Image (tube, rainbow, N blue to C red):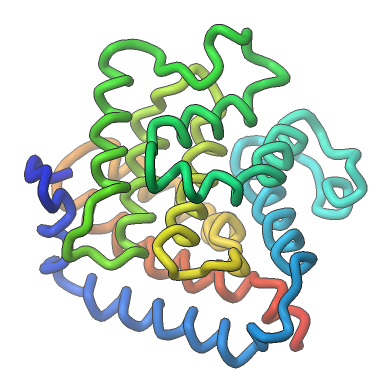
Length: 245
């Protein structure tokens, strides 16, 4: 990320292909939410989106459970961890805006509560990890030129590649990405399923995260361009769209 604390993502806006890709993706999301009947949505639709997201995130983390098993409450341990996050996630939207570090910690505590000793829940691994978390929190609260979708993509990549917690960093990163989309008004009712977008593009997802982690502008550029495609796929996975087919 850029060292400019005032607008740490400003440099991304000028990268080739980024403005047009994200404008198209945001237009697609807005059209889907409007045309697929926002006025007809219910808490059950949001709950279904969160459940699908939990399943997809768990699979990316190594779960072998099916969506049907997760829906029935008989998924494996990783799936149960992801579902536990999903049940409380949207209540953390206000916390994300006030205190991102507190939101990150709570998401990790939810994800890892069944497997990690209490004194390590929500705590960064070491001083370096704590510093990375503070930098990511700055991005979450920044009010700069980058579109909300770009902010979400970058927060996701930073959390997963920094691996600041002792476990469950992928689940945390994908959950916080969804939170950013809600908090920044892209998808206020959380009807898109960004986690399913990443699962649908799993090979590209994993390869672009490796490129991002290796450092350098090229890896960041590739990740950001991938993010636009993944968010579009997440919109396609919305219960709204599936219900209308």
